[in-house]
Image 1 (cartoon, helix red, strand yellow):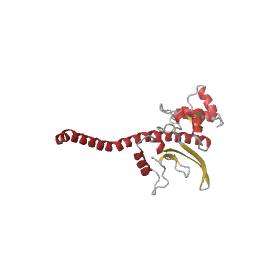
Image 2 (cartoon, rainbow, N blue to C red):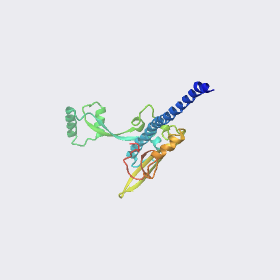
Image 3 (tube, rainbow, N blue to C red):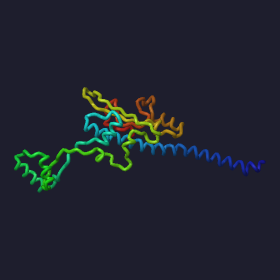
Image 4 (cartoon, rainbow, N blue to C red):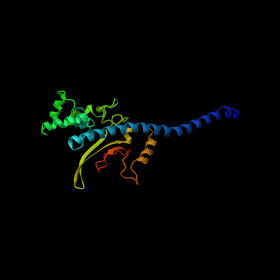
Amino acid sequence: MKKLFTIVILPLIIIGLGYLIYNGVQKPIKFNKEVEFRKAAGVQKLKDIRTLQVAFKNQNNRFAGTIDSLIDFYKNGKMKIVKMIGSENDSVAVAHTEAVKKAARGKITPQQLYEMYLAGDEQLVFSIPTEIAVKDTLLKRDDFNVDELAIIPFSGGDKIEMKSVIKQVSGVNVPLFEACIPFNSILKGLDKQLLINLNAEKGPSEQFPNRYAGYKVGSIEQPNNNAGNWE
């Protein structure tokens, strides 16, 4: 029996203990890798929301109140931009443009210059306001799907929390927004105890009572230049 224990049972116990130790070490390592992988997806989603919110504000002097409004803005909205025709480094074209303006006694408009340009006068240098579709300008990535903008990755369908307000700051009305992804949504399905440890480490605490337990961009409490709490 002693021989059986030494030859068969003891090696099995050693192998089992070794596996438990290895698994205990690898478990938090794998967890942290998965957290970083999911974080990258969540942060990118919040960056995309920020990009659309900034463009929306430039056109409307306020932030969108819902993600549905951002989706509609992306699909159907237009952005006002200043289109540059010609190069200011082309001295010949600059001189020609000045001559054209002088002949018109300074009463020629950018639209008229543009019509001359379209008619064949390519030696012109000027800028003209124009509009371009948002979807033709912003977030032109193969992996971007605007219809999934509100969905928290890996959550099974949970929605990103977004709010916008206009708040008085030093007597001035300031548009503000925030978009949030809770840890409990984006990290859904991971080890429960390690999630508890993560929330205790990065979430609200006595030392940091206002710290958000998740990833967040912007703030409706005070201006923060639309920064993300991961930055």
